[in-house]
Image 1 (cartoon, rainbow, N blue to C red):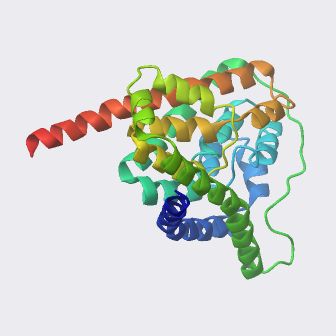
Image 2: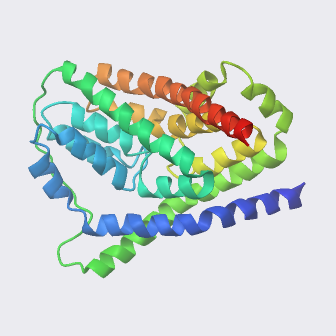
Image 3: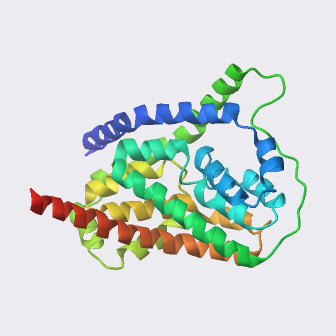
Length: 294
């Protein structure tokens, strides 16, 4: 059993490692050349600022907890809650690290669903945020990724090491959990659970409160697929587990109204379950059509 676990862990690691190196490289480039001060002071005053902050969230390599300082800055300098909500939705689930890992480990189909569904979710939530009314600005000192006088090479190397080791430890934990799931959880148990009509809601309900760092969810989702879960159920787990967690919810209450935080948390629960359900309807029905055609 131990040898099987070690072999499974090694197989998962070798599958993930090349994509993680590419993702770390991409994330370091973004950190090296991104100007946070310009974004917060020059862009957040625009009416389309929520589109910019959603894009920022999708390219800056952060997780549901490490995104909080920048989220607070965006909120302090914005005239509505739309920009910060857009950032909070895309940041933990669409970073270069997670997108590249998802593509490499789970394929283009699930990667497309992950990107498209989160973008639609962000647009819906920002639309709802406009009904929350205006808010007062609160000037905030922005800390940039780079320091004055640093060469770009030094910033890049420091950023690469920061992403590789800070995210890598959680990815390693995810690989360990994935291997444990694969070896020690009976496949028939997972298969019986995946056949339940309530499985998407249960997965989302369990995944939302726990903390899963961005990137860690990908190998775990891979092991869930190997055990017999459907692609949609794996998508539900990835979205709900990385999108929000209890520590994030608690911190958000310190600078966002409780009604916004409650809406944000409940929406992740509903969104994760719904996307998983729809994904299986699309993916599985498409596979059936292909099988019949062949």
